[in-house]
Image 1 (cartoon, rainbow, N blue to C red):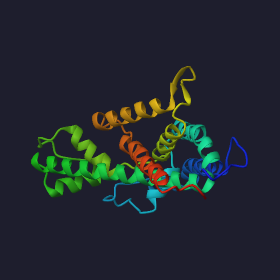
Image 2: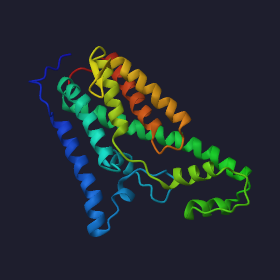
Image 3: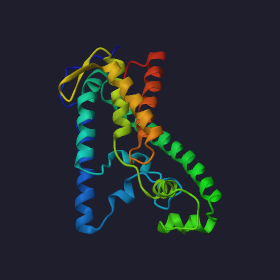
Length: 249
């Protein structure tokens, strides 16, 4: 690479600012809701495009929102742990572009999978006795008649996909993880600080795990296909840079 970092730093500028922004958004979610009744989640988390709560800016802002302390802590820790070496090697501009592209890619993959799932569940509702008015009532109020033959799981998933938002930096963080594995494939990662595994195998296993969970655990409340989307977009972006000798920023 033509780029030569001036020196390795444990808190490079883009990661430092991402940590600050995510922290401020998390504090705003708690403080402003209690003090002013302002709903940060409704405004900035990502809703299904058919929902009245959806707004285009949520495609970006949802990446800086988190549900609870554990959610933000592990995402930010992973961002710092795997992203620091990448930003030191790539430089801040290239790292920021990669982060945003993988975050947006994760959102698009997640929404695309949700759309296909919603279409399938919509047909199941109609075949099971729901009328168009029943579906409208379900989406608006979460209520339905017992005189239908659709499983409760499908009904609740349909309502949840429409009304419950997606939030978190996980898609971009999984993109960072993928980039770390491709850049430092032989680097050892210690699972639970005890079990060593090479980065390339860690990424492959984790990706397969997310795919399995995305297909099998459809009601666990985790956007597994968003995680995969971040990795997929990250892979093709890195390959594009390699192919086009994209080296200098």
